[in-house]
Image (cartoon, rainbow, N blue to C red):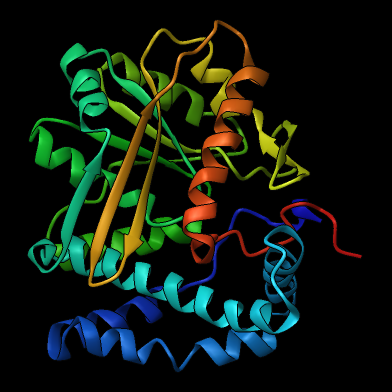
Length: 293
């Protein structure tokens, strides 16, 4: 079931330490090569994750059995590359990458209003890198990323020690709902909030909408906030392309007050376009559609 996802993602501080060591001593390409070592382990022993990915490729993308199986490995590898890129860029190696803006005027208009804003993204590509795109546009721009993973917080703190600056630009979803106050406080300070619209847990309310031809559950929170707060709303995706190139897509959304379902429909249609273009960068490693026997 989709609800089996408990808010924690795979990956440990130790694993990041290994890749930081390789990046610093042997370079980014060597770290990419190293990624081939753990992937077979995940393919053979992470059964729930593999079943979720196989279903995505076989049923939702309509791939053949063979292509679906190969795509699982390729998908894991691309996910590993995004993790390495995240470490490298946060460690000051931004110049090793190239960047492309698609919808830059939407970002500029949002920043110019100085009202804050809500960026709704997904677990595709490398959406946490959005903050570096914004820094290129405006050094004063601040993005607070809403995450649902305590383990991820520990990794962020470790990366903060590596790069020599405190990683305090994230808001962690908590059982007591105190993160709502943090989000409101950030928006009151005209900050940009980046939140994922594609994962929910038992403690949150969920709403349904079709994605890739099958209904799935989505968290109501991001869409509830976006339709009630009078701030700009954008769909934003940061997708990895060959030769260490990142492509940011920013689409401004017309939001009707309290129309949660309308915004969700626009979101799933937008997400489908991205998934169709980058099918291997679907990084929801579980039974997203709650449709596996």
